[in-house]
Image 1 (cartoon, one colour):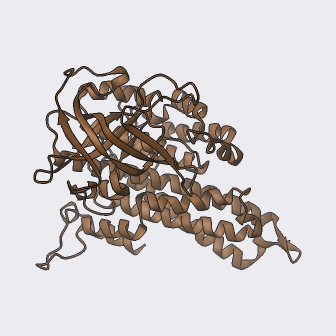
Image 2: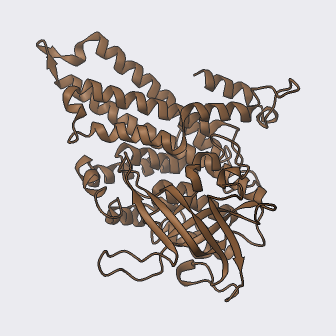
Image 3: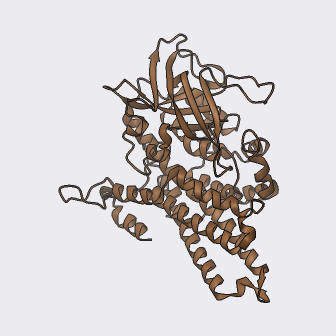
Length: 459
């Protein structure tokens, strides 16, 4: 592994940091989250048009920049530094890799260029709040997480095809095909996403399979009162109250909503599970890098505060007890940053993705993404807690930005955690635990990962 970044990667970081310093301070963040979309749409268009942020890890053939998970992680570190409210994780780390990995050529050509240009946003909808399990980060994604074919979850049924292979406007599904019925909560940016990648069961109870479907969430045309596009027939989207307002979530209710199977043929459940697992590694690396960026800003602001705040006639930063606490946080932050970078590099398949590798980028080492995310989430939680404590009474107030970091730390673990399950799943994948016969299990043993994962678990 070459640990040095290229000049192009440094330029991505510098350009994004300069732009966010000007446009995304704490006051701008607080104002943006109170708008109906939950983020600054003008800033998002600028990030998409000027920097190609949503298409950073997409191939140039589909309008992307042609980079990979490492560049996406670097960008997420900068957006995390500013606690940017934006549909970046939902679009670039969850939905776009799945469309790239599983979509037909027609679906890719219709959706990916628009996603890369910022003309459309997308997200992944998983019923039951089981996003981390669906991405194989906290448990095996064998399909049971999507409802098991029983009541609940989201069910898909085939209907007669009215207009064969003729897509609707802007890449929406053709008329007929499939209908979805059910509901999903805690869908990241689900109230504004133009395209929904929905996990649903089909085949009934006896022949149940979990597949992915495309739903064009907006029908086209702006609503005269709100300025937003009306939802597709049968789709009700409600923004949910969340502790972290910078990470808006929604509840989706689908009542015979028209949908299109993601991919060709009748769908391959094994391919879906593999694509979700590969996407989970990329999403974990991106979210880990974002958490590192947030922790870095929180620590920097805390250090600046203790250098100015005086007690007993001297800055509180001059007290050895405070210095030791901040030094410990700095060491933890650097370790989490290294783990996030390695996870992003591994998600890209190492130096280059192998020929014919499954998924959008290649095969990562077992458990790397989950371990990096666990370490980053723990670090952010520790830094945010110390930031509130060392800021004293002002750190508890709504007006101070310390609460932005603390709430981000709490909600990120709810999104793709918890931490102990991330580590347990990584150890299971690496084969650290023996099976009933006393033999080491898991696919990681063949990949030579147990030693590396064991060391990371100890950390």
